[in-house]
Image (cartoon, rainbow, N blue to C red; front, side, top):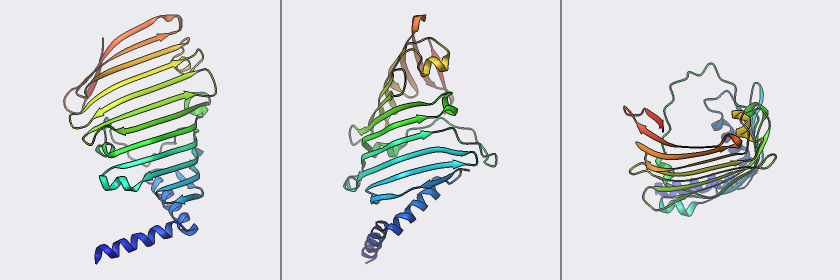
Length: 265
């Protein structure tokens, strides 16, 4: 009986969420949740589609006392509830036509800061797969990198097997200036934490890396490695303009528990 009542209540809530009033309430709750523990406010625009399975938000804006921080447009989410029956969260599409980061948020002095630890791979990601993730226009404002730059971002996240292995592929391309392409391919195993990674960056003269490092272009970087997180080994190759080529090995090793150190040679 209790289960039947619960299903009826869920059906009622689902139905209410599809009404205009319900969608406005969902938008307010999204804004409220995204604004928790932050001095930023969130404004959520019109929500269309079937919430929460296949829906679209036309605009989302994050602001603080100094103005707009982040603008998202045409955000789309489409996922399969059937996959939940198999213990998986399968997203068919998560995309946006625009993500504009004007600047980093102003620091809230009232919030106490605690020492940051190195991030760990959330176990929930082992049950997550994303068929299509994309941002058509990723705009980084002048206050982020010295000048406005526009990129296109695409990614996939896939479960290799039902145990503990995930692969991720990320592609980043600049679309408003000197040619710049970055790719990342990685496979992570959670049960016995290990990482296989291959990352490449190619950039024409006058690109982002040249500006940040004050070096001539073109620039090319290649990083590849594999191993357990406690003793991960990689090889880095770099070519910068007329300065020649550099090749070095990297070692990421665990020291005294959570502390980690890099060693190059």
